[in-house]
Image (cartoon, rainbow, N blue to C red):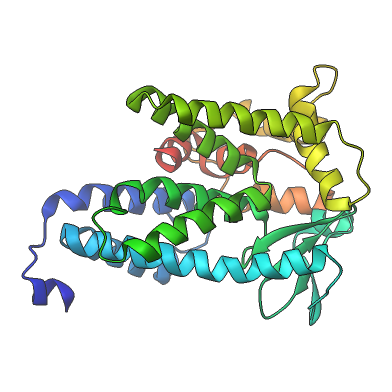
Length: 305
């Protein structure tokens, strides 16, 4: 309806990214060789993705602005829940055991409230918004913040979008998501180089200095202890950072690397195979294992491309 109303043309060039997404799904499900058909909802999503691509630039900008504002507002409620819990006010209405076997084995479970979700760990708890892990929230917050940079001045909702971007930064920082800090750090460094804004560089240095300072303070709060553990290994040369590699998972990956089947090498063992083995053996592992073991080399290229 929107395409018809605006007189937008259906552009063939947008079939390219949509075709790549389609191929990614096809490869992931190994052309049905695993006996699992491609879910119809994924095909519908590809059609909707194509229609969104064909929207006018103004509509795309409006869609991004609206989504960013709604996202920031919704996640803000979860942050309120997190901060209240942090100072001792608990709004938990029920608890939920994680469907992830490893989380359950590590004693992790979710606290649910009308405001949002918290992931309880052995030490402290994580701010997740409405996601299952804080890393998801932090990644989306960082990407939306970067993506909306050019829209702030031109947006008719300038005030709301400006406020939403500030909230995104706070939400990402509170989530303690390493992906958030990495993406924002790369973005700020790029801004310093391209715009020669030395004040921004100075602010970045001050932020790093604050992190150093926080690492040296003895605290009793469980969440702050987790923050120190999260960043401490980065600044301590005598420490090691957990890269989620394990002997068991490495041995399992040999089934892929040493497999003589060309089909397996190119397209993997099929959806959920590594995760299924991981859950049954309670072995942790880096996420890249999932992608390569399940999708193969072609699937990995499509996924990250």
